[in-house]
Image (cartoon, rainbow, N blue to C red):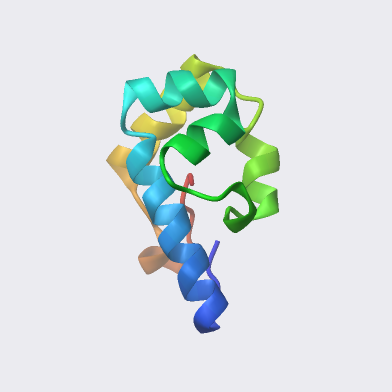
Length: 89
């Protein structure tokens, strides 16, 4: 998910912050129970998270979120490989 411009920069920062929060098991557990509440507790406005991303992750279980967080930690953002890239968050 690569975006350009001022809004894209802000979006990238929000996604990076979200990815960092997902490294916490406590955050993943809270997010799987109440996505909006977990975001608010982390200081992230749900409206700032790209809709496609929220649609994809807001209904995932703790175990599914843990799998994504683990994959993200191991692979990170792969856009440097193809120019298109893949970030799990």
